Length: 163
Image (cartoon, rainbow, N blue to C red; front, side):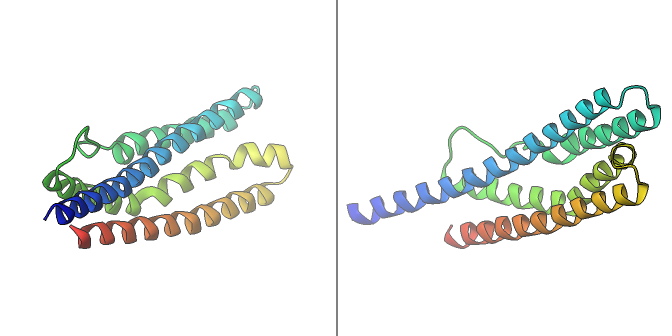
């Protein structure tokens, strides 16, 4: 009997550990967005007095700020202590969070990448090269983002099946 209880506790701890890793991954997405905003501000500083570049970078930064506050805040998901019931509830909330975020992440990141186009065209000397660079960035981001979401959803399904 003690062995079964210890095994259930160990399983619960493993589930909790996996769930917390998913939370850390989502927090890293917020950190990455903040980093992209910082990159925009650095590029604004280096663009000197080119207002078109500065305005496009401000728009890109504003889009990311909206994205952070609308989709990247983990409201009522990250808790201090967990029980089996609260973990189940948190996993359900996190699934809804991931589903909502998945719908719009590429859109917001793409707008930010396209806001770099004026800076890149002044740096590269060609508008076409700047657009190609932005599209390559968007494509890489889309592929990596979808792979990340697939992995997160697979982990969530595994956690839900074990509970």
